[in-house]
Length: 164
Image 1 (cartoon, rainbow, N blue to C red):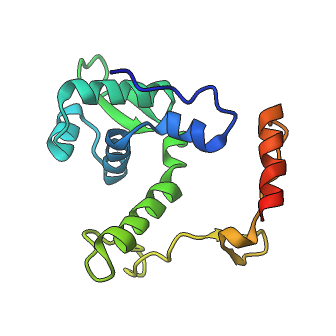
Image 2 (cartoon, helix red, strand yellow; image 1 turned 120 degrees about the vertical axis):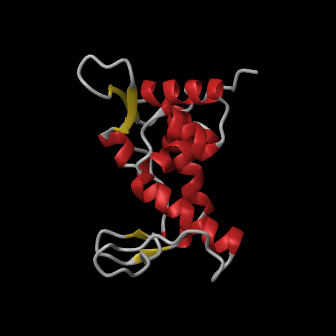
């Protein structure tokens, strides 16, 4: 069954979800951050069917999150590496993992803790900050239409500003 596309939405969250994909794509990106690079290593690590992995890798390549490179000059073997766009997902992947640690596993039951290599201390919780460094919550923000807003997105922004 083909998934419904979100390409028609004038929304950054919808477009990010469209680019990143689904649960398998998140797992592939996570493993790429772990240093996994080969097709067989992804299969072994994630336990994903080869046909699904092939589809997800192609999807991530189409969206320039991962690139396929030959292992060596003239090699018929390939590795899959994060692009700059893929590396830019780092804060989102860390935030998603921290959310899972807190709300799925619970404090003290985290399966894997991300630590600073220098201090060996766990990372600070990812947060949303104002330009002056203040931490913000949903109640501290609003949404305004940007230069790329469609007419419908403009209406949505206007409605959101009335809500809060």
